[in-house]
Amino acid sequence: MTTMTAKSQTASRFVPAIFAAVLGLALITLTGHVQAAALHDAAHDVRHATGFPCH
Amino acid sequence: MTSRFLVSALFAGALAGVIIGLLQLVFVQPVLLHAELYESGELVHFGAEAVSAHPALPGFDLMRDGLSVIFTMLTYTGYALILVAAMSFGEDRGARIDGRWGILWGVAGFVAFHLAPGFTLAPEVPGVAAADVALRQVWWFATAIAACVALWLLAFGQNWAAWGAAALLLAAPHLIGAPEPETFTGPVPTEIGALFAARALGVGLAAWVLLGCFAGYFWQREGEHAAQAA
Image (cartoon, rainbow over all chains, first blue to last red; front, top):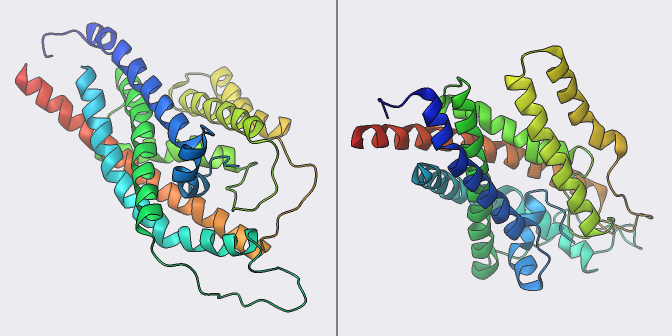
């Protein structure tokens, strides 16, 4: 890492950062927004408490 | 490099998620259970007789409350992944990322994902009247994303054009307005609804402060480990 320039460090982690953000977005979509009955019932209280639109 | 994102987000999200799950069980869940007594019709507001404000509530339910803690951990791990991604972009632009500065990032996350959508679509108590859920979800995502961009522009923008655009992005979703119900049909007393929204936002702030602090700490620590290994 110390031999890397700041610019190459920025480039080397751009793709992993986007990957992490998309994965995170997918996760909150699944836990907070997908309306499938089983998911909705299991996550019901969390969705209300976290301020997601629930019903 | 990918592992630095995944490991720091997983640690921060799981750790913060357990604490937040417990905070929600203590502070939000009793209000929710109280509201459900009105949602189910067991209690009736403005009926023939005045109703006690302190009814007996169901106690701890291992399956229901256990699932809630697990889903809270998953939700905040998702948020942590988004947060460390944003932190890495911030670090590239000269921001210092550690546990202490992470608190500020956490507050920003709270504003983007709780306060901004909640400003018009207040956290809903069960039984509340509301517009179609899909439309509200579209508005929720649009508002949260607009707030993320706005806060980024406020923090890293260099000129008034950027800051002005940020103000516009913060205000626009609320000027346009969220999907609202045609009529009010909620059976839950307003006292419970107000307390629920306040509790949800309060726990949300505590949640994001913890998440930001942990994410900053683990991001920095994983970076040091990687530097030592290199």
